[in-house]
Image: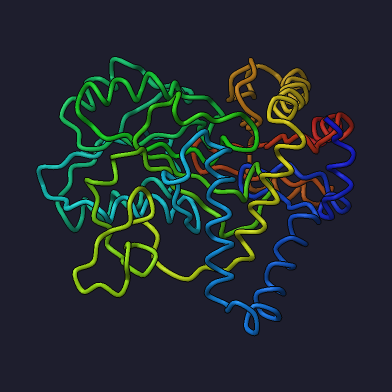
Length: 368
């Protein structure tokens, strides 16, 4: 892949060595320009042409096929959201929970995958079981015991804490055998590795385009496996949620559409479409291969006792043990190197993307 062309189109990289894509990826100019153009057209041209709602709706609907193709899903299985957090909350709010329900999550989840269940625990009496892990790994026997009577099992495809890849297909199979619904937080996957939700077999998958896809903030998505939507009644409803908004006896939209509500900006839609188009041009395999090469170079320069992520490649997320994570982040920032600290484990996390260079890796190692 032509990483130099990619770098040249990302203005943020002119100011610093950026290693925090796991939090938010810096967008290329073409992504921002696509969003700007869509917004200008919507505000300047649409009012006196087909109308602003028509234009926004067309942009919205044009984005679903792009996301579906990215994930290996059907277009009707995709709902557009604002973020991963938003997607999880839409699922959590669509079930009539009570004290007989059990939610299982791992101890590796982001707050986005923790807080919605804590609220249900507090307000509805739902039992929330936290599956303990070790070094970013799950024990399959422990999973079987935990989900034996569970309503829903939530876990991440790639952990934000260690960069480990969890065995999604195996975990989904275990949950399905137990009769539990599966919800996968996949936000760290699209953009750095190929995703096939059919192969995963999960019931629900949430993600967003503002990390490894280098898209704009506000561009999230929710995959709902065909037929699964029948068990959900979303807590919010609007004209996008139903077949005919003018009917008094409304009928929910088929597929994932019932999880959508109302008006959204065409700017984020256009930015996400452009980010996915760029991803396709660069090639998922080529991107992952370059991330692996750079990540291997980084790990080779780290002492064994400092590396908290796997020594072998699993993702571009590399967690490193340091004496004072916050101070380390500040010290590196003074040298124009951007990383982040983690609350668990107490460490710094380095996100290596395809736009990074060998010289940047070497400079980071020297600074550490």
